[in-house]
Length: 371
Image (cartoon, rainbow, N blue to C red; front, side, top):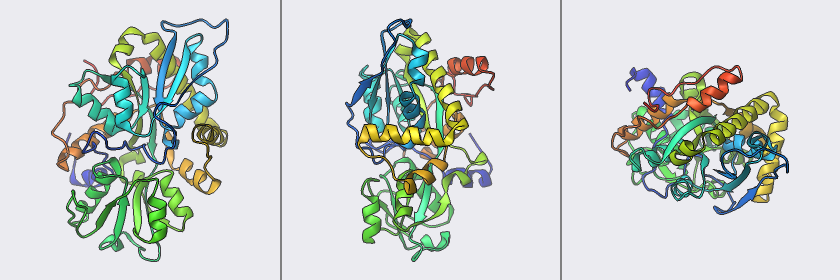
């Protein structure tokens, strides 16, 4: 994929790249307190007709960027489409653990970030998963200490946190720095800007202590920092064409897709209907997502964090395949990944069937679909 320098300048700044290590967190894996093995089953009506399997197991993160899963489960929209097939959900803190669960046949379908989707597909030589739908875009910001940083140029010489070496926001920030003409050693984070890798759960404390001057982070961490006095300097979505880039996908194991296409289609109907309800009822959906978070983590987000975080995330059926392709290319450019063959990572036929039936436009796979 090639683009003019002006386009690359925007997209490189927002690049999402593969983790350097298998244990690296996915873009969405921040601040979660839920157990990886935590799970629950939805109630099924006694007279409901079962599909081709008794149970479908869906994994997701208790994070706002997984609002489709949170709200769809909370409001019973997935279970309604599944009928007599029971929905069982599991929560994860990191992308690699969710990919491991998919590979181990512990879950069938997952909501997950682009980096682990690409990583899981390439490591299995294209044999373990397909991306079957989109869920969310955006939700990443650069927030800073306004007493120390007033403009983007002021970042030079400052200490800026990212979640983890090689994670999506880390690479996005490294690329943004490079486009500014500044130099930073990617491994150590030392250079014209000090890139400080800090777990999102402790980033607010690091900011309060003064050990960092700002952070390039996903929601709700960005809004938590703003609640501590930081100011938003840049919303990453503004750097992308159409202000959209993938932050959450829906994946399925190829085995489950082959054996239970009716169940996959039902889950996608639930996803499409959930996304439509979220976009038509943003305030109710926000409250539903927060109620789900409280149920799963034991703690709801306060309004000063929830409201701006929710506003910055776009819920979408479109997997934004072209941006995932760009993200992989940027990982290669950053020296973090050998050029991958992503042909076949998408199978959007079931989703497009659902969208067509709902009177909605079909979505594209950027030439990366199943042949």
